Image (cartoon, rainbow over all chains, first blue to last red; front, side, top):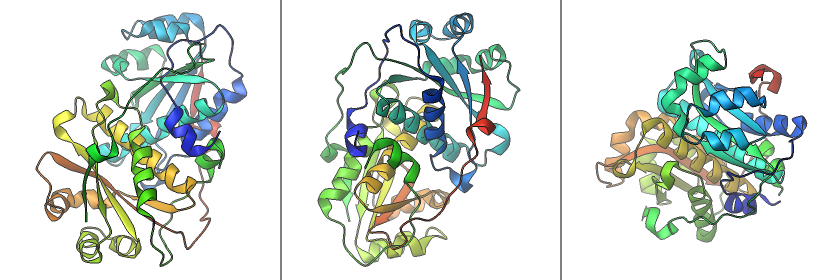
Length: 167
Length: 167
């Protein structure tokens, strides 16, 4: 899949068929995340792979989108390591770049994923559930698998609506 | 260029040859940015294209990396529209996803770019210089052009260093 094509054809996938995802592919997705740029190349991202049904069930209780987590064969909980952060805004941007790389890589592999952010309201509970130390702060959960729905529609503003000026 | 290949071969490019960039390509890069996901699909990104030498010179005075801005044929100042934001962390992540798409699209087009963040220390001065209203907050400047240096090296931690657990 071409890079430009992949960027514009990626969609949020929330329904998955009952088919496991190869571990090697999950690692490729995480690797793609790590190729994101970060300020001072501090690489603040950390990951937890969740596939165990009981853990997914407990994780799902922390968001109103728990049904997506329970049905996804793989969830990747994405954390920022507060001990290596240097600037909140820039580190959060880097985490967004990392997650976007993960979504694009998922798409490139013929899989589907959705970026779950509503669960951040229970970031502390998720951290405790996954048995992580205080310095790990939840940034998102990426739920992924083989897509049931191939091409949900989506829309974006025209460039003319978001281009403020040309100087 | 393949999507996975593009993600891992993108590098920060800070030196450019003296050759203009087609406006159509600049618009493609911005369009790629807008294909990023955002919470509630609020699409908070806004853009200013800067090519005028005098404006680039003034912009460059706001960062110690001004020499990159002055030498780049095109700079895209990326803003977040505070009036449509709903959550600081999530909106900043969305802006990072948007900027990452822009960097990947630049790479796909055979161009090079660097994400400049140090200039955020003078976000207000940049906003005033570009004549934008208070609600526009600078998120980054992307400097781009035809690359002089093709392949700067870079490195990332191994996946085993950032994968905390598998459950």
